[in-house]
Image (cartoon, rainbow, N blue to C red; front, side, top):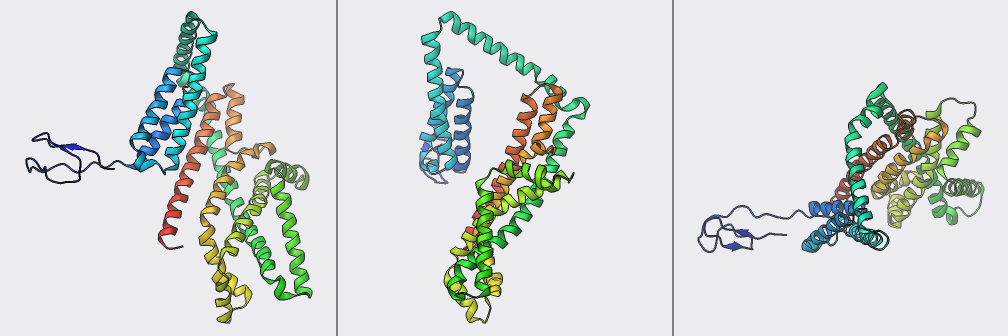
Length: 366
């Protein structure tokens, strides 16, 4: 989107992309171009803020109006941006909440009560802001409590990394068994090989049903308190529990990728003299992985957040580290917000990597 410019010499308004003023023929500065990504981010931020401050109706409405104005003035370049649409939706919610709060103040409170409420709210915000340095020191500096966060973050990454590897290995095995059964059940037509493949297919189906049908926190507790009750290695138990859980979802992702490969690829492998296994390993699996790679990356992001329930077995990961700080400082806001912000930064970082990966795969023709 090209914005209008003005010639510094004659003051003429230039709305096109000319490099020379049509009036005085003097050179013009570079054409300012509106960045759609930046505008979408601004709309999202203002929409989010309109909800956050909706308890102050005037501020909430003002921020919602700003978000609406940005969306309307840049609709040509942001109308299809998901973040801009989300920001507009948040602005609608913020405006509605602000209006409802304003209506409550008008109907149920007198002018004096409203003024008193506003004064107390403002004093509370100022007092909270003044206490931030002392609260920060109490939560993170005293007794080196910040180390709970860093140690927990390291354990979170450790559990996530090894659980992701285990999940991918299990997922590939289960996906190969289920997709092979779908493709070979008519070709085998009975016999020991058919019965064996059918048995493993039913076993994988049972695994998928149980794992996907029960909460991950229950699976984690069963693994620690029932299956590995004699083990004191909480990290290993967490890796196994999350790995088996992730494997069920990875299996369906990879199986979907394998089934999406054209049947002609199998026939091409057979025409080259490859057996079924070599065809799968050398032709089908590489193509399927390129198709499902963004979905696998998203599963890794989900896995990072799922590890936050490891505290149920006493594992001191990131969330548990923040909870320990809360129990020792008797202050819940600062440590839990810090944990939430760290998770948000991690997820945003990996989400950005996933979007870059998706764009590169599209450019490569896959």
